[in-house]
Image (cartoon, rainbow, N blue to C red):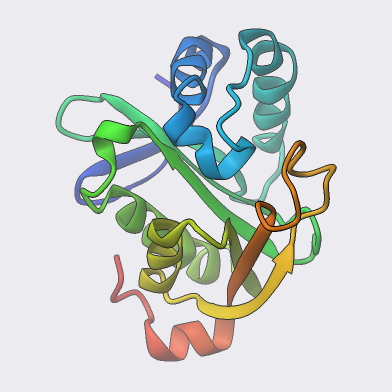
Length: 193
């Protein structure tokens, strides 16, 4: 079994392995799942095997608790999606939170539960200064998860074309939420987990 980062009341977050390729292909093949990520375009198996997983596995070489984490239900070890906490691609001194789940697991609070645990871990264990999250403007469910983690609205922006290919400016419009460690700890401490 792959090493575990942490457990919540219902989830296990563990490292990915190359054996997870088929799970990721299935997840990224659902146009509804990918709607707010690639405007519905799937990620090919070849890209997952040759680029995505090798990139994700390199994160585990770091001494920091950063990377991509497979989310499984504690009850039956079912893979339901993933989370990440990694250096922000636009502001690498900050850590970016992200998540993706199979449709049948939307609306059950799993994203909020795992994201809260990662934010708590990021501030209390790793002692990161700032944790951010971004989502397209129309992705209200993701905005809700960010708020439930204790992140606050910071700004609106437009993703550059190289990040979200094929979309016009309106389709690339997004929001950024963030939290600073001292403020977050003063408000939440570890009460969220």
